[in-house]
Image 1 (cartoon, one colour):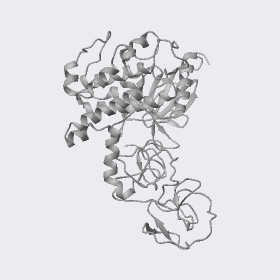
Image 2: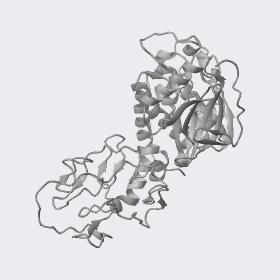
Image 3: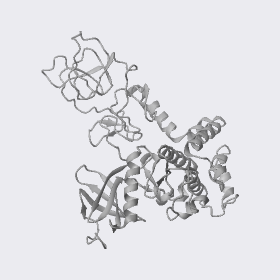
Image 4: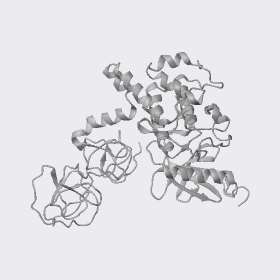
Amino acid sequence: MNGKSSVRLHVGRKIGKYKLIKKMGDGAFGVVYKALDQVEGGHVALKINNEPTSNTDILRYFKQEVRLLSKVDHANILKLKNADIYDGRLYFVSELGLGSLEDKDRRSIRVSFALAVLGQILEALIEVQKHNIVHRDIKPGNIILFPGNVTKLGDFGIAKVLEKAGQTIATDAGTHGYFAPEQIFGQPSFASDIFSLGLVVYEMITGELPRWPFRWPFVGKEKFNRRVPAALRPVIRKALDVDEHGRYPDALTMYNDLLSALNKHNDSQSTVSKKRMMPWRKYRELEFSNKYSTLLELKFKCGRCAGPISEYMVYCPWCGTDKNSFKGVSSFPAVCKRCHHGVKDEWDYCPWCYGKKFSWADVWLTEDKRYTRKCPNRRCSEQKTMRWMHYCPWCHAKLAPWIVKQLDGRCHKCRWSVASDFWDFCAWCGEELRG
């Protein structure tokens, strides 16, 4: 298809199953809309380009972003939901945040928030660097805000896989105000993304964006020294070294130094200050554990993200995985071969997944204080169920949603109680939670 698309985009138009609700902005790729998913429900961000598919550069960027994002799955990386072509225009759909860091009032940014952004985007970069990916366009507009001060890195449209060291990449990609010096000359690396992120954080803290030739002291140095704890200054300064070889070589190295600096600072502070400067994720999980440890029996760590979980949870509420196995550690005498959650020898079915009937021999019913509710099926032989069970282990009947007043929210999909102030995903059905 040549020439411009014949279809005019506007609020109210339907693109596949998505209805355009509000125009959110324009970018190098095209237009971004808030849209309604009319099949699954919920709002999404829909980015659609202004060029037909005959534009080989746009097509290359589109395919590149889709393929790169399909490789990574992380809580701090913007999740791609769909990608397709509409009237010759390429579009992709991602989760919808509260806006970007660029939209946030810089005057209201606290140092603790800036450090939270730094840590979370470093976590995102650690994940993409595992796949040998350089993002190449880290800037406030590509850092998306979500409830609970969660931030996610988006827009991988100009990212590039480094197939070999020293590979030259075209210089017409990225946002020059946040470029590392070597990136301008077509040699981006992992360290280039570190420099760009350092600029973003420095600007959040001081309100000033350093410029070429990036010689220290930068404009805003006094404010930087006044606001940032002494233990943390060297970490950010190293990220901003104009010499690529003086910088952190990758995100993992900087992340480890950041945590060490935070611990060093915390050791020298009062209890109140420790909580203020504790690593964002660790602090959130600690607060959650303190509040719900007894209720949910939080005795385990997620095998993927190390967040606190219970063996009753089918999904990790922090990263959404359903791959946790409790074999060898469960408080129950056996585990279901299908979902690897704990079960009792006397049960006929797994109460956590809809698996096949167990084949072990009949055994006597044992006493267990965790039996707290009866099965609604009057024909059920035992009628005893435990909190958080999805199915009756005796008759396989589906149980009503568990509503617990101590948990402050309800999942809009399964209607079970959730800790909406903390969780990113429903621990019972895996649905992504929105503020």
